[in-house]
Image (tube, rainbow, N blue to C red; front, side, top):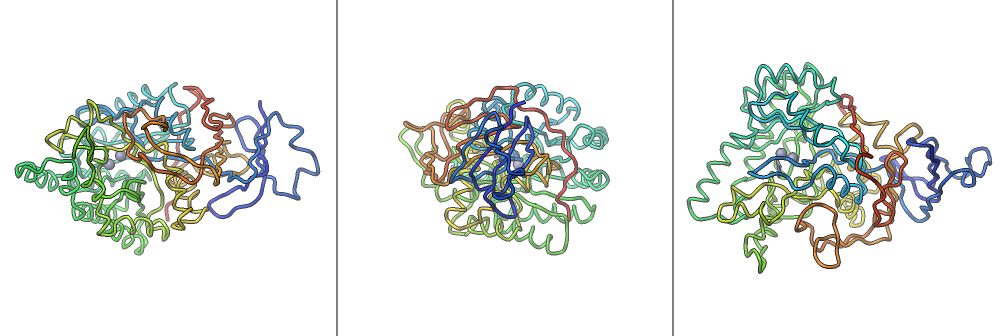
Length: 480
Ligand code: DUC
Ligand code: ZN
Ligand code: ZN
C-alpha cells in the first residue's frame, strides 16, 4: 500500500483551518499532523512513499456533488456525459464523489430502473458514486419497493411536481410517498415547480409566437416555484417526512424554506452555481452568429435562471450564509447544442433542460470566498461536508480526519483557471459548448486524490475508469 504525506498546506474543514500535514496509508487518512505534534519526532516525510508539497495551498476534503444526471434520457435525447466522461470531468474540478439519480420511469419497476443505473455506472467511474432514486411512477408496487431502498445503500428519493406525463407525481402520490419517507427515514427530494400550470403558460407563450429560449424562464415563473415549495413543505409537515428541495432558484422559495425551518421542520434546500451567477437577463441578451437568439438555449434548465433585477441571485448567496440553504450541487445535466439543444429550435418547450457544471462547482464556489460572499470554511461545508452529512456519507467522506477515505484536494488560491470550451480553453465534459464560457477563476485545483490514489496532478489525469466504487449510503446525518 502506498503511503503519502501532503505537507506544508493549510487544512480547511467546515469549522476551521490549521497548518497541518495529512498522512495517508493506502486508501485512508491515518493522521492529521499539526506542527509541534509530529509523530513523536519521527521524520514522517522520509518514511513515506510519496510527498505532495502543499505549501501555500489549501488542503480540503474532496468535493461531493450530490445532484448529477449522467446519461439521463430526457427531452427526447440523453444527457451527453457518460459516467466515464462526467466523473473524469468531476475529478479535474476537485470533486471526488457524486450522487447520481437512478431513474424509475413511468410503468417501470424501481428494481429494474436501479439495475439499469448500476449497469451504466459500474466499472466506468473515475470517482466514487452513489445513487438517489427517482420515483417516476408512485404506485403500490413502487411504494413497497421504496421501503427496500436502504438495503441497496439508497437513502433518498426524488419526486417531481413538474413534467406532467414524464416524471410528474400528483399530490396524492406525493402524500403516499412521503408517508414511506416518514416510516423509513428516507429523505424526500423534491423538484418543486407547479408543472401543470407551467405547461399552460408555456402553451400560451408558444401560441403567441414567443418561442425563443428566454420564454422558458417566463413560463416557469417564480410563483410556480414558491407555490410548489410551499405545498411540498405542507405535505411534509402533515406526514412528518424529511424534505430536501433541489435546485432552488427563487428567493420566494427560500423564504418558504426559511419559514418552515424556523418552525423546526426537517426541511432543507440546495442551490446550484447557475442560480448564483447566471440570470434571465443574461439569457435574454444572448445571441451569436451561429445560433442567433437561440444561443440562450445553453442556459435552459429547470428550475430556470431568474431575474437579477428581482434579486434572486443575491438572495441565494444570503441563504447560503444564513443556512436557509445548506449546500450547493450542480444538477449536472449536459446537452450539446448540436443535435440536442437544437431540438427546441422554434419551440423552447422542446429544448432539453440542463446545464453542465460538474467540473466547475468547486472553482465557482471558491469565487464566493474571493468576493467575500462566504468564508473559506463555509466553502468546504457547502461543497463537501454538508453533502456528506445530508446524504449519509459523513465520516467516510466530507472530512479530513483519521479513518476517513483519502479523498483530498490540494487547491491553490494563487492559481488561475480559465473556464470554457473555446480556443485556448479546455474542459473535460462531453459538451460542444460551455455554459460558463469565459469565466476567469482565481484559484486552481492542483492535485486530487481519490481514496489515496492521485487521479489529477496539475492538468494531467492519472485515474482510470473503474477507479470509482459504488457508495452504499446510510440515512441522513443532518436531520434536526
Ligand atoms: N432539471 C434540469 O434542468 N435537467 C434535468 C431535470 C431537471 O429537473
Ligand atoms: Zn429537478
Ligand atoms: Zn436534477
